[in-house]
Image (cartoon, rainbow, N blue to C red):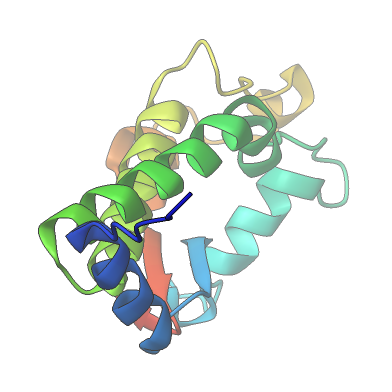
Length: 154
């Protein structure tokens, strides 16, 4: 019985794509270069204080809560985007960047939804100036969440 090798064009594109340099490090969140306020408090400091708590302020996890609820979906999205790029004959780095931007937008939506982002504790509200708008309402925290691929903003 004779065997005929019938490679599809997608296979050749996949092999070429896998031989290229793929930027695999995706980071999404508040990065060290996000800036600081007039008092020298960085946005990264604020993000860490919310995530882990600081002094008398209890933790208000935002990143781990998002990640725990979305990890399987993000992994599927990466696979889907890579498949789309292969079929289109695109550089696989485009798929990585599209996924990173989608994750960034999803985290920003997640923390904007007050039902998913734990509110301030009563002890925190007592210490705050009632005239101060929360970071989430000013958009500072949300805007500071950025996607980077291989260390470069996308």
